[in-house]
Each structure stands twice: as C-alpha cells, then as structure tokens.
Image 1 (spheres, rainbow, N blue to C red):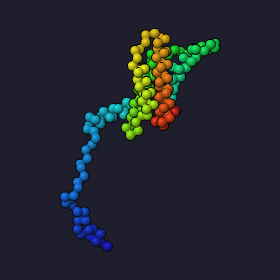
Image 2: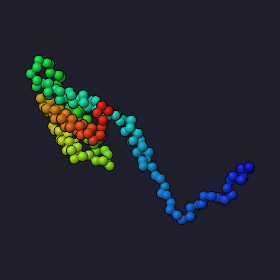
Image 3: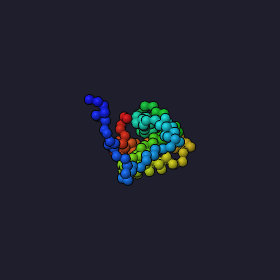
Image 4: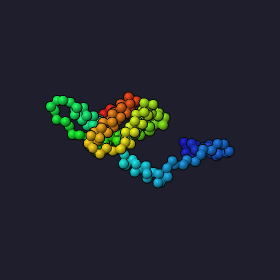
Length: 159
C-alpha cells in the first residue's frame, strides 16, 4: 500500500468561516511581575507549626511556672525577641486564614484575627513585667487562632 492512499486528497480541517473565534491568550503576568513572583517564591519559608508551639510554650509556660510555689527554678523570662516572633506568627496565620477567597475565614477566626491585631498594635512596654504581660496576651490570641485553623483543617498540627 502506498503512502498516497493514506493521505487525504482534500483539506479535512475547514478554515475559519465566520464562526466564534477563541480570544488570544495573554499571560497573567508580564516580565516584571514574573520576577516579583520568583523573588517571593525564593523568600518563602514553610510554616513551622512546631516553632509556633515552642514559642507558645515559652510564653505561656513562663507565666504558669513562675506562679507556682514549688522549688523549681523559673524558666527564662519572655524577651522582646519572643514577642516579635509571636507577632510574626500572628501575622502569618492571619494571612493564611484569609488567603482562600473561596473559603473565607469563619466569624470566630475573624474575631481572633482582630484580637491578635489589637494586641500586636499595643505600645511596646518598657519594663520586663510589661513584656511578659504582652507576650502572654499574644500567646493566648495566637493559641486560639492556631486551634481554630487546625479545627478548620487549614493547617495541620505538627506540619
């Protein structure tokens, strides 16, 4: 059998003759937008839930253990660096809670996000007692938000 027998004799695909035409595709980002996206991806770090729990233990654990009457030594007091990390955790988890436009945060999450934001915006205290109190308020707001996000299966414990 020769190849000419298998080849069609006429053009089988008809040319466009006034029917609907698909719109020409345009990329969602230009070159600058792609570069910004690339830099954001390079700077991205995965969510470390264990680090959040460690900071919560440091902040809340200090408050609980410092109030005991046992002869155990009190752990190191929360520092400004810990407060900064707690604020960073709150910001990141607030962003995660509101990131999905199809599944917006629940009313409870919105309240927790607003509570965390108000604590973050408080004036930074000058004394150690104030730092401990602020760390405690941040930790409790963060803990509640983490619980809500885990319950909604937005983040996983130990992820």
